[in-house]
View 1 (cartoon, helix red, strand yellow):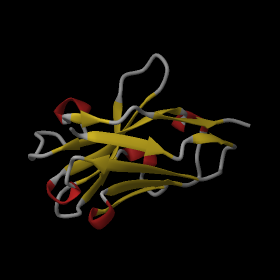
View 2: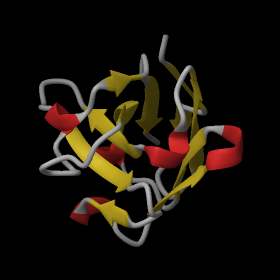
View 3: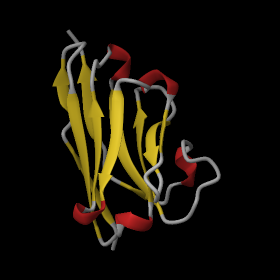
View 4: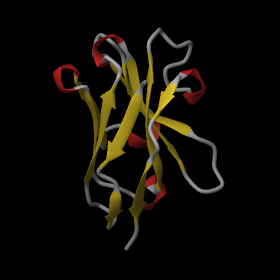
Length: 124
């Protein structure tokens, strides 16, 4: 049974940093497409950053230059380093995985497995 568990969310002031982690059980990262998605209240879920099985990364425009996605295949762990956080980054962040190549890596509908989500709040 596949299980993805996120951690590392919390509250931070604007300009601060957080690092999210996602650990998988019952699933092998090395052949997977992995991603971070977020959903703010009243808004649709959106892609934040993804990494494919070859390590290539993609980022949503609002987070480029501030967020970094990485994965450790040996530890089955996906990370999201978030710097220079803004109030508009406030959302529930989800880790997701897919075994085959998605039609659109940044579209959440293509991902099969999801974590429970972790809250990130950026506020002064």
